Length: 404
Image 1 (cartoon, rainbow, N blue to C red):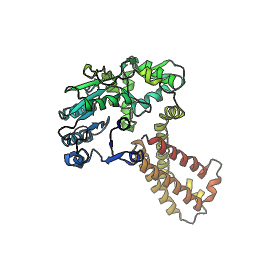
Image 2 (image 1 turned 135 degrees about the vertical axis):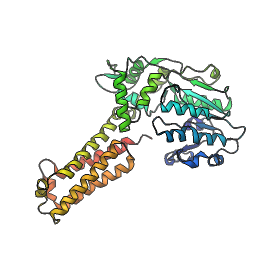
Image 3 (image 1 turned 180 degrees about the horizontal axis):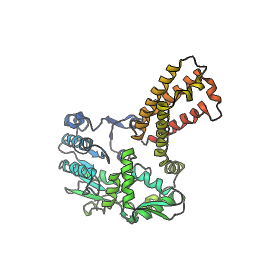
Image 4 (image 1 turned 135 degrees about the horizontal axis):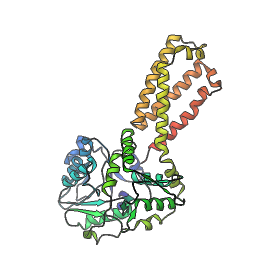
């Protein structure tokens, strides 16, 4: 949205929790976390919305606590709307399917209710772009799988995807030509089933269509529960429930004078898939696998550190300058630390911090045992040598975890 507005000649001030990347991209920025109380006051936003500045609100969360849902969807936006000048306009990018019985839908409805009369509400269905994030990243990843292409249920759910650039042009149009009050559906002109969309994405990635692997809804919901427990992003109960409810968004007749949107077949064919697209699609599902593999390693390393009998590891350290009691204490303390790391990885808690902790701990283990028992590098089963690929794997995980 910010890039489209800038390209159209608007002066753009972009908001995010972390603005370093946006600043590097050449944007003026406002740094703020919408879950913090200071952003729930009009006075916070007023300096940035002075002199008739317009507002486009794209903020939203799919899975969160009720407190965070309210903050992001209601409290912070309501404060920003209250700070708009009398003649300024706003646009809220909401979502289709908010009649569903999910927390996401509930707070989207509340967010729409909080919009002032100066704010136009747009409800897009599936939004796609040249890049991908969340659900569209998952769609590309599933399309890239070998042997079978997974689809939810019978795969006949109907979408009418809209390109993010087209949605941005419609939003900008609404700032200058406000539609009537109320929520307006925004979608592309071409309907396509989930199954056919998977085939199109697979073809775009350079692969022939495959037979479908139909996932019954009960299995999809079970996978959603696992996704929620392990914080697997778009793999969630909310995503499945919203898909069940429907994501079809026929264009509102009251937006007919807005810039036309392209159909999915047209915009998918606009450019070829590059190496970055192919790599991303193939690596997307490897990201949770790498994280869970690291968690598995830390869990069992911790269990061994906490429970292994001293006479099984002390002989390996017989030339150490440290006493047996010290070595045993190190093993038990290290085991507890390993278990804590595993728990953080399973919940995907603060990935950047956990990367540093893992690198520090594995590097510390490697250096410490190199000094205490350098012969461990020569063990026929690998010994300390295994720490080198582990360090690389942690580094790869840290790269994959950063999506934007």
